Amino acid sequence: MEARRRRAEALRAERERLQAEAAAAAEVAAIAAAAEAAAEAGAGAEAAAAAAEAEAEAEATAAAAAAEAAAAAEAEVEAAAAEAVAVPPPAVPLPAAAVDEAAEMALPAKASAGNATLVKATSAPAIEKA
Image (cartoon, rainbow, N blue to C red; front, side):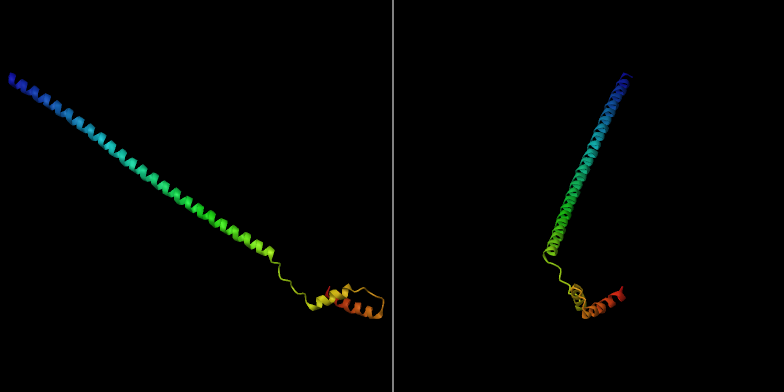
């Protein structure tokens, strides 16, 4: 009977020890899982940071290219404006009739009969046009 009791106590102690070991093993497994999750999150954060850095670099490159294109376009506009100022526009020749009419109008009017006819001849078409 005493032997059974000792044997039962030994079995209880062994069971308690095994339960404690199992609890410790479960705790270690939980810590390992948490560490692995943290490592994955850290790797994810590192990957996200690298992606954000690459995106920022791409945006900076695009902004620099846009600024360079804008500067080139502005230089072209300034060059075209300077060329337009430097080269006068071509002279437009006036029709011969307009030149003759302007010359006749510039002549002083005299009281002679020839002038009166000339003035009458040049004034009549102008009045008809009006």
